[in-house]
Length: 123
Length: 242
Image (cartoon, rainbow over all chains, first blue to last red; front, side, top):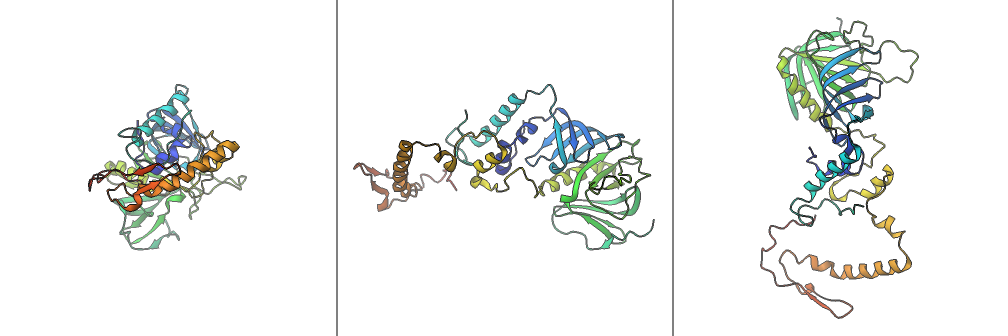
């Protein structure tokens, strides 16, 4: 799975539920926008600012009219809800994403590699 | 159509242009603005008609953008850009996509919306145009984001403050929060450890291979700590905390 190449974005993701959304890559998901339009499509990217990129999108406007978009990028600011698909195990997804981030952070071993900030003790 | 007052004359952007698409028609709310060049630059999105007038859009005002190839919705493949701002044309009765905001007088708080379509004569460029916009948009995160502490710089990022705002259970205690959980005995131990740490701090500066007289320290229990002789350049490859 994809982990951001930016220290800052990994840090943000690790400490917010954006990390869950980042685990939705490849899943078909519905995003409700602030202006009450909705977009359903396959998640191709979610960044730390909750900008969401979808492919093969069905877009429904406020009047209910439907159109298709090949690709859609919604700014985080305009996302109201992201519907987590039923088939997604939320806890497992979060743990997987955290593990991916930690593999990057502790590359070379637990006490070697780049230190981004003090190591967290996980319960 | 008639002249749009928001069109101005300005030079094309010279810096940070991620993508440039000539021969691109700009359409606002279903009305064409003419043919010109779209400049997808890091600072803003600009379109200049061949005559030299055009307009710019700031990324923070752009709500979303998309590639539309659905000819039932709009007869030409294009880059769709929704902007959170008002432009001259407000009504979109003819807009085939029917996404336009029709007169919603009842909704006084409705955010202004303007819909632009950029129709390149070269349809195969749409992917590149879309991606360039994604990259530029990501350079302009929302400054008004209330949910997060914006002070994220590198190793100084204050995990604790961010966690407190999120209301998550902290995964570890940082200084301020942990201190309040210490017993009196714990506090005394902490002070002793901090004292020892202060004494040994200077020894860290010898790790790069330079040995000074300060590298020998005596601790309160008489233990003498001596940094082992180092070979010059031994730690050249080491990652230094910064």
